Image (cartoon, rainbow, N blue to C red; front, side, top):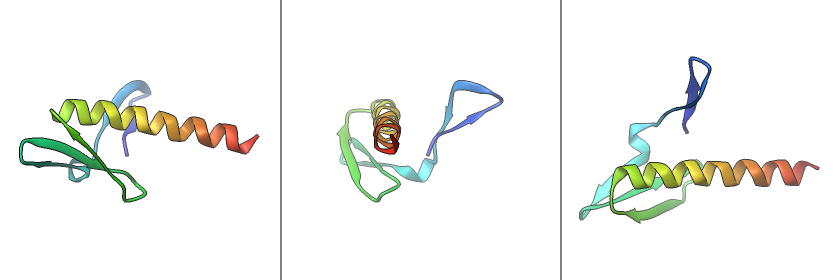
Length: 65
């Protein structure tokens, strides 16, 4: 999961083992064990992971109220 460093909320570091390339396409695994993809590039996969995490966070906020 990405984590913030040095207080910079825009800076993310990714676990390298979360991403995999197969047959020229990129995939990533969620913390829940789901595979997401395919994506044309690792950068696209990383962008989707950020979106996925934000969605999870939003669901968590709405479910806790």
